[in-house]
Length: 416
Image (cartoon, rainbow, N blue to C red; front, side):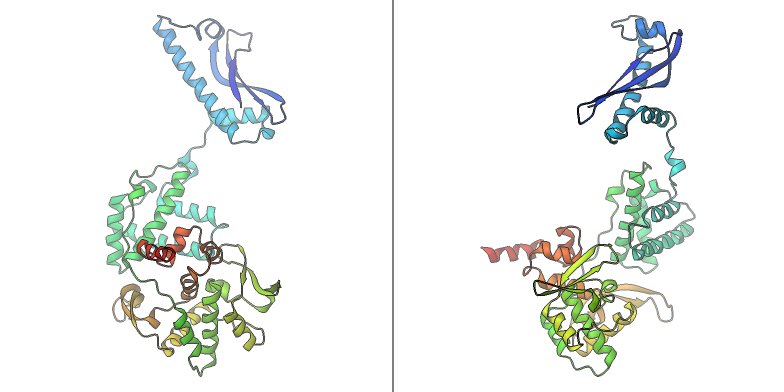
């Protein structure tokens, strides 16, 4: 525990007070360091008046309050800094530096931009080494939309302007541009994340920020059941590129990884532990080193390919090919979901529209990961599934597979 006191150390009649920091290290050694403040008082005041109680002289009482407040501020600043510093790094230079920070604080307005678009640039620069390139790209899309919004409203948005009035107007703007309610919700969520980052850095934000959200439209989480995967496996395909895509799709339903990691899998990443084949790789999005067991269905595909994975293909081609595969497999029942459609013929502007579609139309590269999580939920402990899918919390995982409170309650009855 550290303590701070103040001393008058000069022989002059008026001089700055000295501050002294006292603390004990973990090994029991007492340390004392001193430095000079900029608070000048008279020797007579400090020795005879500062601690005088019940004085009736209003000028002295005001002086005591003024000096006392300044000393409390200095003490709180030093002790707060001490709590966030290893005692090994505390010495006279450290104390002097803390006083310099106290008297010359950095201005948040100078250090951090308050305009939302400029803060976007700061945020991306700050996070460039800790978030995936695709995430940075997504933030760039949001920034472009905000630029368009500012131009349409002829105003410059600041971090503190992100409030309920902004949310309502921005939502109306996005809807006029043809964006779906759920996509607008994700945009608003990302903008809030930027503002929360700014708030952490000391910038002023709206007191309404926490209530800024868009109610999303409920849609079915599209996944492939084990029966549908079996239909896909049994489907007769004549074209080699569709067979290749079909094998990747089946693999994805049993390894539960993003397509960015899927297409980098090869036999050199496989190792054997206790007779079991595992694949080890580094996730592109998170940078985490993953070790995932290979399901017998995956091993069957590798065996027919003499131990090799299918040929890697681009994400765009993969998305297109697996739609065709699922169409050939007869996955044509109507389900509710979101699909990008042209806003009007010839516009070349595509927006996601929530409607009833044949299931194969809604299949995308993401479906393998969701199918893995959904199909094995309840069969494999949730903590293991979360490890493989990479979700941060169980709540996020359950939302991802679309489990409602009613679903969970019905599953719990199996244990009664």
